[in-house]
Amino acid sequence: MAIEPWFWVVFTLVAALVQTGRNVMQRGLTETLGTLGATQVRFLYGFPFGVLFCVIVLTVTGAKLPNPNAATWMWVVGGGLSQILGTFLFLAAMREKSFVVATALTKFEPVWVACFGLVFLGDSLGVALTIAIAAATAGVLVMSWPARGAQWALKPVLLGVFSGAGFGMASIGFRGAIRSLENTSFVVGASFILALGLCIQTLVLVGYMLWRDRPLLRSILRAWRPSLLAGAFGAGASQFWFLAFAVESAARVRTLALVEIIFAQIISRRFLSQNSSAKEWLGMALLIVGVVLVLNS
Image (cartoon, rainbow, N blue to C red; front, side):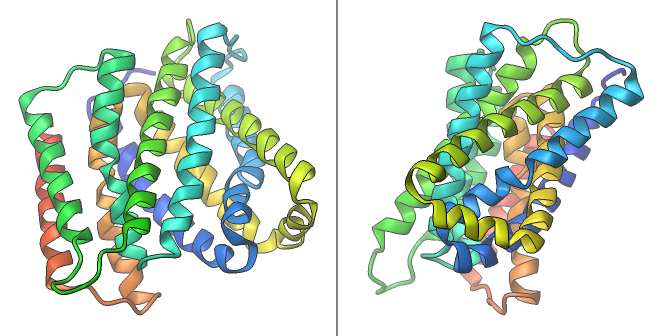
């Protein structure tokens, strides 16, 4: 399949929308399963859907299963573990702050992605993209800044920022894994790495809970109904993220992904009864400027 210039934009927008829905579902699961339990739901219940997506792609395209090399394993394991850490910290941050602000705090991610991409993948940064990332980061800072006279809460800030770093490293890891596959189309490569990554993540977390917290694992299995839907949304979002990473630099993808803030704002107002301040609206305006700039970079 030929890669069109607009593919990555569509893939990213769909991924951001689906991921927002998954975040809402995981937020509810955090209340009943805790942070680690809700983190595992994303991978354990997403894994079957990741495999299903891969099987469908291989069947439709008639392609053979890719043969991962040493570099592929290095990238996908690093990306998988980084995503587990990022998800855990993100859910912990959501328990500290409102849904919109917790989501915003993780959005330092484009800065991390730009730095990691430059160092590990050699992805170059043009002037327009650098300005776009700066505008988006400014928007995050405005949204996250405490109200006048309010006490600083360092914990949620650190949780959000380092969650973004975890997601940033995961983006680079998965993009590196897809690029390391030889003689493989971008659709097949993205689908295969998604299934492989989810397999690794599920094994790591299930192994950890069998060792340290078997009652939690039983609780997760009992909560299969809401967890299955969250897993489906998570795998669906990841499928489109990986397709975007396969055709465009992670820095551009993750900067455009900031539209998730707007989706989170809409959901928080309609379903979570959380109002936004003028400061948060200003922050979102800056994020929009960053998104417009990245589309023209």
